[in-house]
Length: 294
Image 1 (tube, helix red, strand yellow):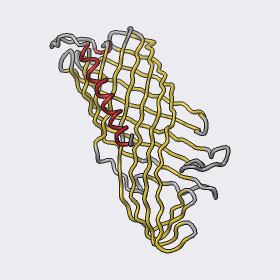
Image 2 (cartoon, rainbow, N blue to C red):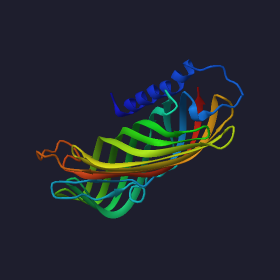
Image 3 (cartoon, rainbow, N blue to C red):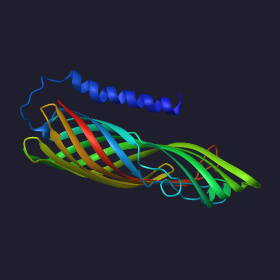
Image 4 (cartoon, rainbow, N blue to C red):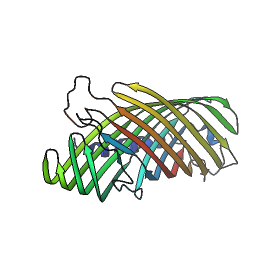
């Protein structure tokens, strides 16, 4: 299965889960106001503009590579709209289980005069770089409400997840590549899956019959296999419900995940980043949300 078809399969499966499962369990819609702090199910579809300031570094046998800033160096813009899906289930007044998937796929083209060290390859001079990246991320969260009142919920959360990172970079230069000088080029096609998790706090408030405000903040640091990961994430969201079932929202999301990747202990190098590197997933996004509640 190709990467594009795999991403399409994940999108299709999550869309069916987000919009189909709650629909099968839905009751008759009405205009009467209910307390959406305690919906049994909610499904969300987000459309976000991702402002990406992420970085990646691919080390080689000779040492560290060049830090590639996606925005400033490689010209990755945040103009495209990125989708996200989520489903939450509240089995009781104090507990909630949610899953979500954020799709992020961006590209950029940039010409500059510099030198790049990528793995064991070096190019310098006038460089033309074409980059495609995807940083999809999946998450599973369990929330427990310490305070569960009629107009607010405040509690703690535990999350697990993964970042699916794919970097494709083609760079040509009027300089040198590896041991050969002249018009050189270097290409990398790297995908890794980074395990993530976090501990945090959350709060939700009912501001009126139909207006709601909520926010989360979570973070953690630790080492898993070759990956030394530090995480901080936060978001704020306002929601308005037009009816018992349908609502809309707008919000802001911040993500800062840094992953230091150690070289393989046996010294082997079958692909990029086997000799180590670093990836920083740093971005903010402004989101519009469609909500279905049941």
